[in-house]
Each structure stands twice: as structure tokens, then as C-alpha cells.
Length: 105
Image (tube, helix red, strand yellow):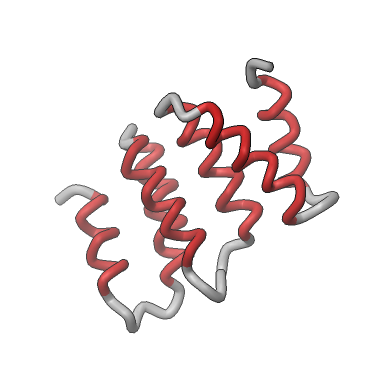
């Protein structure tokens, strides 16, 4: 069974209490499996669940590299820039700034 099919089941179950946490962990698992597109979709899903159980800055921080691997450089830049406005002064901001510094101008 592929992890992406598990994520689809989670998204369809309205009773799942921490859906964005599940999507976030699914995205992380898919990154490790090499499924960059699936990871991107899972991290995007984690961002739309309200209220979030994972800090939005962290979800955006993980989404940025997924965009990078898929060649979506503008989306990556926008996503990482958003991290710097969501949680000022956090460890996520420092990591996002480091990733932004590595991008082409």
C-alpha cells in the first residue's frame, strides 16, 4: 500500500481530530520515500486545515523544499518568505532565511 493512499483516507474522514498533523506527518514520510509530489500535496493539505495542530510556519518551512525539488522556484521563494512573517524570531524563521539565501537571485 502506498502512503499517498493512506493520506487520501485521512483527508476523507471528517472525524479525524488532528487532520493537519496527520497530513504533516504524511508529507514528512513521503519526503523520506522520495515522493516529492505527494509530499507537496500533503503539506499543502496540512496548511488548509483549521485550526492547525502544527505551526503554520513549520508547514510552510517543509513545503518550500518540496517545491524546490519539483522545480517550482517562485512558489518556494514565496512559501519560505511567508515563514519569516508568520513566526518572527523563531527557529523556523532562521531556517527559512538560510534556505532563502541559497536560492538564485
